[in-house]
Length: 100
Image 1: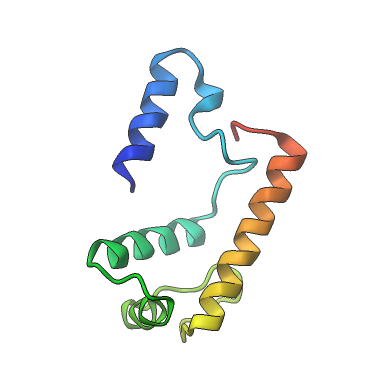
Image 2: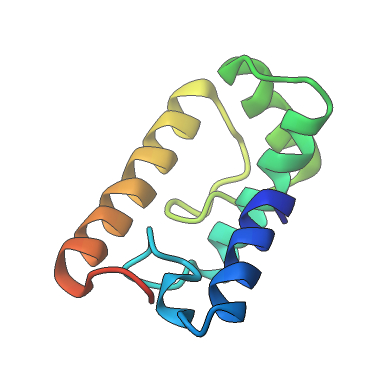
């Protein structure tokens, strides 16, 4: 998904420190979150960075919002979805530490 993160993950495994492969996660991301991440990376890769335009592109691609299940993306929905996902990841990190 992200060459830099993939390389860091591989390096952590190469050094016998697999717990550091995803050190910022307290849990694995869900398939829906992974789909959103792939969609975002594709959109950002096309040079789109404005949240309203990103939301429009997510809707055009038919990406399903991981938390609400909606596909009618708006800037407000994008902000809300990202905030909820980040909040859950922060809570999982606080509870479980790194390396999930």
